[in-house]
Image (cartoon, rainbow, N blue to C red):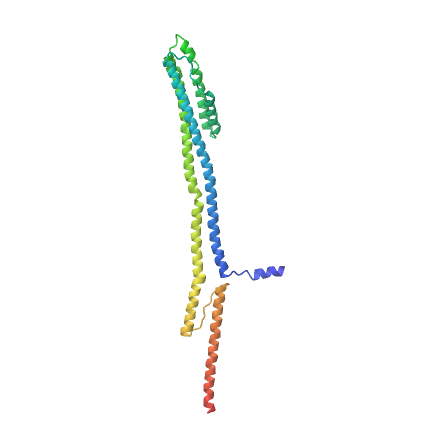
Length: 283
C-alpha cells in the first residue's frame, strides 16, 4: 500500500488534451449553472414573500375602504332620519361585520404602530356608536334639537372615526409602497448572482482562450515552422516545450523522426561517398 502511494505521488496523474478541454469547459458550465440556479431560487423566495405581503396589503386596503363606506352610509342614514320627521328609529348597521374587519386588520398587522391605529379605529367607532344610540331619545325629546345634537355631538365623533380610518389606510398604502420597492430591489438583488456568473464565465473563457493559445496554438505554429525549416532549409528540428499530453508526445515524435531522417541522410551520403571512392580503385 505504501509503495502504491509513493508511486502515485511520484508519478502524478497526467491529463490528456481532451480531458483538459473537457475539464475546463465543464468548470465554466458548472459555475454558470450553479449561479443560475441560485438566482432562480432567490428570486422565487423573494417573489413569493413580497407577493404575499402585497396581497395582504391590498386585502387590508379593501377592508379599510369597506369600513369607511359602511360608516359613511350609516352616518348618512342617521342624517336622513333627522331630516325626515316621519322616521324615528336607528338605521340598520352591521356592527358585527365592522368589528370583525377591525379585528382582522389588527391581527394582520405585525407593527405595533399599525396595531395602535386599528385600536384607535375601534375606539372611535365605539364612541360614535354609543353617541348614535342616543338618536331615539333625541327624536322623542321636546327639549333637544336633533340637528344640533347631530352636528355638535355625533358629527365630531364621526369625523374622528373617519380620520382614524384614513390614518390606518394611509399607513397600509405606505406599507404597500415599501413592499413594491422591496420587490424591485429584491429583483435586482436576485439577478446579481447571474451577472456575477456571466462575468466569471467571460473571465474563465478569456483565461481558457489564453491557455489554449499559449499551450496549444502557439506550440503548433512553432512545430509547423520547425518542420518547414527542416524540409525547406535542412535545418535541425530543435523546438521543445514542457508538457505532459499528446501535443508534447507529438512534438517528441516529430523530433525523433527528423533526427532519424537526418541520420539516414548522413548514412546515404556516406554510402555514396564510399562508393565513389571505390570506383577509381577498381579501375
